[in-house]
Length: 252
Image 1 (cartoon, rainbow, N blue to C red):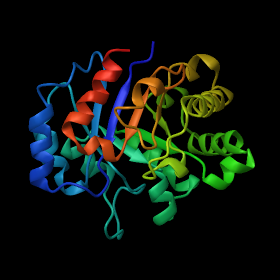
Image 2 (tube, rainbow, N blue to C red; image 1 turned 180 degrees about the horizontal axis):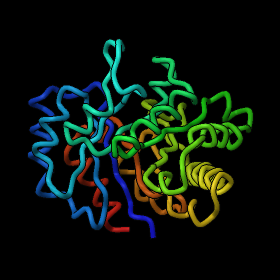
Image 3 (cartoon, one colour; image 1 turned 135 degrees about the vertical axis):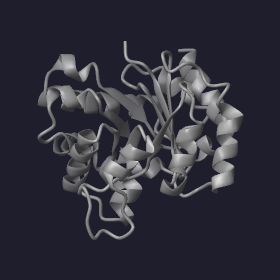
Image 4 (spheres, helix red, strand yellow; image 1 turned 90 degrees about the vertical axis):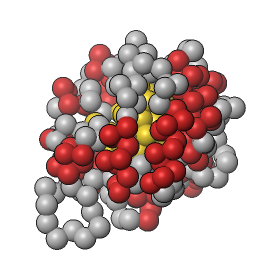
């Protein structure tokens, strides 16, 4: 049975003080990591502050990483630095990165390999635009993203990946894919992983849903067979809401 993973993506929100205060409010209320994996992905400047204050029941993630060890890449963050800071997870290929910062399937693949080389656990985002959804080609589009992301990734390494299905049309819009739509596409992701490796491997890989997840809809989403958690944006900024959603996973 796959363990649920609930990850908050704070995006470009929270000052250092606000981030630390959030951890102080939730740290003693989160369940053991043996039951649910709980992650907060924050802006790079506060990662060390959060890592220093994380307990065994919480892990800290970055929102991006570069695919080179070092170099003249102003504004980027290296995997070796994230490893040194004690970061555990890193989001790769979020739709906002793809749309606004020229992230491609090729750079996503390179970043996955770089993260794995430095013992970082990638949360790999895939998802379609409204146009693709309306064209009825969502499964083919997402499968292509998955296959390209996994190019050259070994069977052992893919088990350290988490995939996050984030329909672009549902991110920050208040729209949420119905549980049935989310399940159908998460199943397509699992089938794509099986095509690259085999069904046994695919059944071990965790797949989150992301896209306007909140305390009101998370229970129904987590009840789906192929949804193993959530990558949560705005609702993860509120300590009470975040705890509520983690507890939803705990009680499944």
